[in-house]
Length: 239
Image (tube, rainbow, N blue to C red; front, side, top):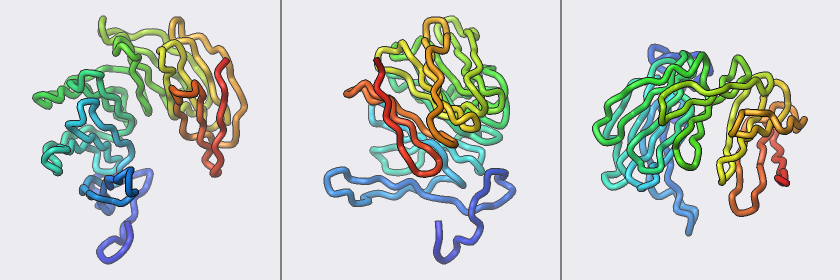
């Protein structure tokens, strides 16, 4: 943010004691492309997710060490949940009852009950960054930034599954619409990896660009889109 009163821009290394500027979440009307609502959140917001039932918006705040839960009906924050060092990735179950939040500065996923806001934990391993769920919500997949691995967790049996190293600094992750494949960008390796979820086997490892940072799977075209830190976007067919 900039303007009067905003003079302490956030940083990658921070804590609530740093007192960096707080920020805002903007809602954009897709018919007019106007900003029609603004919500105050925390310092250095990272990931935004909406529950499938359109009841809540969840925002992870990197420097505030917390998660904001915003009620769409009430148009305000109804709950702030302390996460710990560097909240990052968010995934939400299909029934909108459970949110999974990565605490990137430690070794766990926060499991948040969105009905009573109670919290439990999954010990996924150090430095979790991004999270996706399988279409049936039976499995969770998490990138582990420092180790360059993708870890899996069986949510039905509540136990660890297989993990695999994909490259240096595994960052963002996406899953195919049928749940059979994962796509991971490896920031320091400059690669994108395609994994088979059934056995976590790497099917392809492609040099994509310098510092790939974001990735998504487009259900309609069955293509994988990769965002490169330098400003380009690469689009890949899946055949």
